[in-house]
Image (cartoon, rainbow, N blue to C red):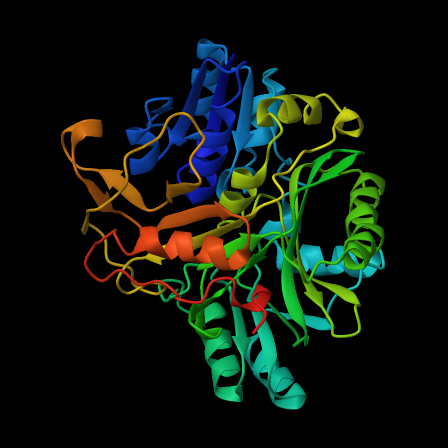
Length: 438
């Protein structure tokens, strides 16, 4: 069987890497892919990003299953387009993807269906937004309504930061867009919400419209610098499992957030299929609130989660696209997986591209490695797969290790990261610190 993975980041490299391990899969194509997928003999990059052109290619190639990684093609309706032409595809429809693509839609949905989340207000007028922030004070959270590759959320610890975020997100000049927000129909909007205290965790499930299969728990690190300092990013590292998600918290998240969301979407006439990612805030007393929804696997959470998954991902995806997730029981490696993101010079606001990457370990096609370097913002230089690899985006690599403890996985990942070099590389030195007891 032939499989197509849509996207070109670290998440897509990890999904393709895992799908290629299935004995039922003869070929895995990645569109457009990256330098890492180009270097793996089991994977083939396809230089197509246009949705209709990709659908035509998938039909011509008789692709048995398409898995959509990033948010942009989901928000553009790739699932609707593929299904319309009889192609099997795992992901949410354009309407369902609004849970991520519109923060205003998502917050209104949660309010309507009684799903616990932070108090909020939505604004299109900058003056009103500034006045609200002055009234509420800091810390406060400012979110762009559209997609922004994980950078459209500002956790403002001061009024100055909050006002600056509003200026960035509601700028009257559309050419001034330092956060790279893709505004939704109707123009720029912001959601301003209360700052929640507690510990964050990533809770990701697979959905087939009715049934749900929970992925392994994980926790990512959004801030650029050690000790959760610096600006928000798309994610600087992650590990799985997350000790903060105790069995009690897990049951509560399923009961109070995940299942009401699936039932609510079905009730609203928008059944949800695909990965549903709930960013959770777990309060010191064990209560759970929803920070955000993503309609895809998290990045970099996917990388450690895929390292731990023992089940055949192709079989699971086929069940999910047949409405049979209730017949699936996911099997997990009991060990800990931890991934460290190596980012480009200038990330997150102005990442530099084109730096040569050296020291990459050879690609192991057996899938049995305990340390894997997943590529994100990379490209092969002229000369194809045998050429050198260059940085081509903000988050460049995710060095991911599997070991018996968080401390060992951390040590293993950093040992490998230290052998890899590109000018201006930056990475946190404390990924997993919350799970390591002093």
